[in-house]
Image (cartoon, rainbow, N blue to C red; front, side, top):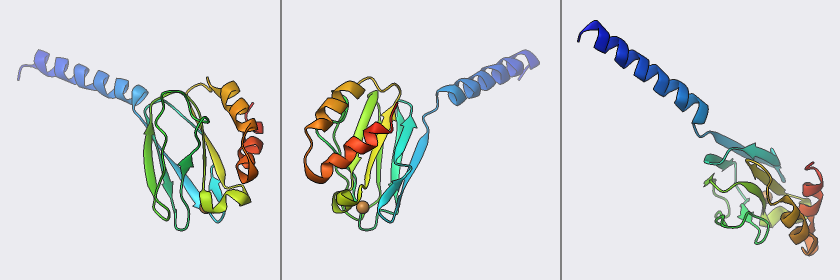
Length: 141
Ligand SMILES: [Cu+2]
């Protein structure tokens, strides 16, 4: 390979790496510790992946009306780790059903919290232990 072609290849490759570093999707881990999610509020970019670990005796279930419009709801199997890629911007609320009464609920904010007002309003209609999500939403600015 002549030096010019070699340099061109090096430059192309390094610009590829730097653009990848800027836009690369990241993975975020949520640890189920006893009866809470750590962290309970997670901020990510659209396209990032969230993984719940140590899910023995736990699950993760999104709440209807408390995820962005057009986003896919989820339900992880009880006792199993779960992974999810979130592309739609906004606030997502989820719970661990067995420990909902202990306040084992969490929020994921993907990009900007564009649907926060709608989520807050929907959360006001929640009943019983699901109202623990309201408390969690109050932690958001
Ligand atoms: Cu749990």
